[in-house]
Image (cartoon, rainbow, N blue to C red; front, side):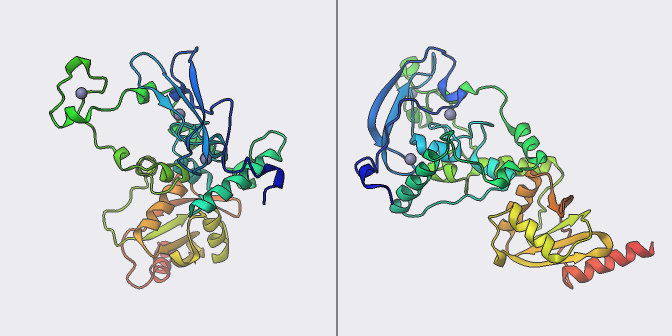
Length: 330
Ligand SMILES: [Zn+2]
Ligand SMILES: [Zn+2]
Ligand SMILES: [Zn+2]
């Protein structure tokens, strides 16, 4: 519970400076901001916050902050585009690579309470920033490498262009060159189906999904056409127990629930493990996350991840054991 003296402050947020990425800020180094205290509700926690509005450069549309500074700090994202401030990536991509869990409060009450708790936590640290979890601090160098690979190196000012003219799309715009909106045919890129809360919490983000699967494919982890394949094979594991693999799988992919792992079996002879999931979606998400982390680390050794080839008819362990024997015999 917040202290009594803070009761009047609870539920609102006032700030002097916005937290913005370079792209949203624009090219102009002398950008002038207009500020409106408690101008709008934060799109995430729903508390009124200070809205900043500015013109990011010639030919750009006016931009404004969409979420409050507390929500931005919690996820280390830009208040306008909601992309990660360090890498310019969607939170879903960043968190998959770092093996972080996306906890999202459900109701509006929970959201406000969650934000207040986090605010308090930040106020209690000397830096005013959230302390990174030990997991995040120990994020594998492979994951950081991957984030750098995916990250945009330069600011992306194209994002600040005016929106596409909806009348032009219907062939009905009569304003011609005077029209302040872009006269272009919109591209299907998944962005139109994106919603702000999903982007913020890093779940069901079509843009992130596309980036992660493209990255997995670039590392040779192409999801098989046969949708009945829900098995991932971990190769090059050290001598370990089934529980060791299960533990590292669940800690590096905290979105997996115990019950979503249908079976997990070790083939000691060939240093591999077969993990079958209850559905294809969770298998794909796991493959993408592990690929973003550069593999799966079991007892300090990094194993490779590949998709199962075909549906194991007699159970993964049996066919794997057969494969192991065949290899040993050869
Ligand atoms: Zn907020
Ligand atoms: Zn931004
Ligand atoms: Zn138009």
